[in-house]
Image (cartoon, rainbow, N blue to C red; front, side, top):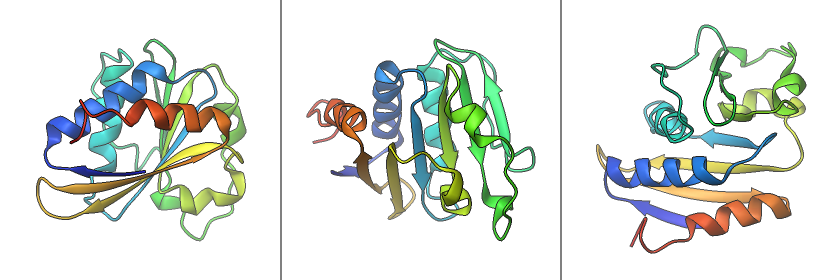
Length: 153
């Protein structure tokens, strides 16, 4: 599914809508160049899960966890390029929480077979294109929730 995003409010609506329907062990990959909006999406998603703490990029920590409706694990794997270090990813992916992974291509060997991928393409300051790819039946159901005319025209 392709969504044309025209402003931050639409990004917020998509992230919050997704946060309302995710369940334990869900894994969401956010792909896109630097500045595409991956961390912004993660922040809106976390707020949609009820996280009260400030959510910022875990670039130097790699992984940060937050409490919300479900535990929220936020990974930024940018610093793991050219690394084969396993930081216990399975423990996060198979926990009672939901995980967002930025720069997942750098840990592709550790990713679960089934997941939701959101490829974000930067167009300009306020416009993005979201390509949503669901891998697995459960994630196809999540994708359907985002196919809502009230979110994006």
